[in-house]
Length: 132
Image 1 (tube, helix red, strand yellow):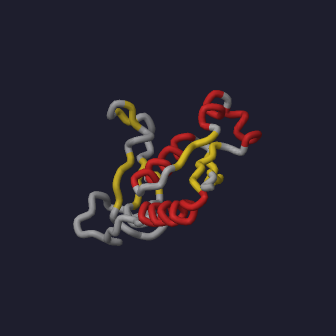
Image 2 (image 1 turned 30 degrees about the horizontal axis):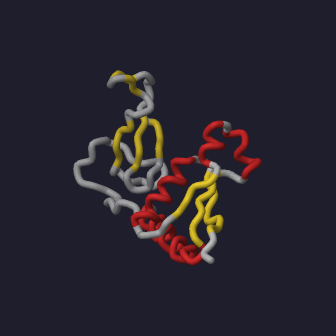
Image 3 (image 1 turned 90 degrees about the horizontal axis):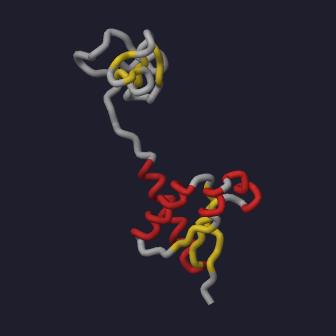
């Protein structure tokens, strides 16, 4: 008989459902256990072992391979130039020295109006976040 086995544990239902969807797109049936219980009372997460993704025993290795490949592809970084001609700013990243930067307004503005006087910048090359 082909039994369900515990495959992976999650802290949030969002992560579990994402992986369940990835497996479904690749023809692997999976089931989520404890999702409703933990969403109703997250303090029970430690007691029941978190949200569990379960797969059939004979699909276990295939499911591992599918999610590993997905995670490797997700980590593939956008290739960018270390330095660019005609940069938007006259300073460089303090971590790597790249001048390929962009201004991050997401955390310091409210409807386009700047709240803080220091401006946040992010380096395309290394991902460093800094103020200038």
